[in-house]
Length: 217
Ligand code: FES
Image (cartoon, rainbow, N blue to C red):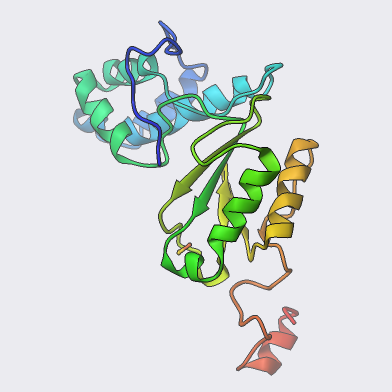
C-alpha cells in the first residue's frame, strides 16, 4: 500500500525548488499555454526523480518521493490551486508521498503473480531484509511495498524496483537481486531465469524455426 500523504508531517521540507529549469520549460512546451495543468503529472515525476538523485548521494540514502512543498511549487508553475496537484499525486501509485528507501521494491501480488508464488517471494524478501511490507530498512536502502498488477503477468512472479522489472522470481533469486543492489551492483533486469521475452517456460511451442533464426533460442 502506498504510504499516506501527510502534508504537515515532520519530514516535510519547508521549501522545494526544481534543479532543472530547462526540464520544466521543455515539459510545459508540450502543452498549449492555456492547458499548463496538463503538465502536473510529468512535473510530479520530475520532482520525484530530482529528490531521488539527491538522496542517492546521501550517507544514509533515500529514494524518490514528492514533498508537499514540491506539489505547491508545481501548482504555482501551472497556475492551479495546490489541491489540484494533491488530487493527482494522491491518486496514482507511482508517486511516493512519503520518504522511501533508495530502492523501492514493489511486489505484485495480484492473481496471476499470486498463483505463481508471489507470497513466497515477498516472504523471502521480508526475511532477508528483516522488515515487513510497508517498512524501510534502517540503512535507508530498501522499502517494501505491495502493489496491484504491473502488467508483466506472463513473467510472474515479479517485482518493480525503481524503474526496472525483475521477473520469473524465486525465493532464491529475489534475494540475489537484493544482495546485488545492496552491494552497489546492477542486477540483470527482466527474467531472472534467462527466459527470452514472454515465451513459454518450456521454450517456443510454435514458430520454432523463426525463433532460432532470430537468435532467441
Ligand atoms: S499479476 Fe503480476 S504483473 Fe500482472
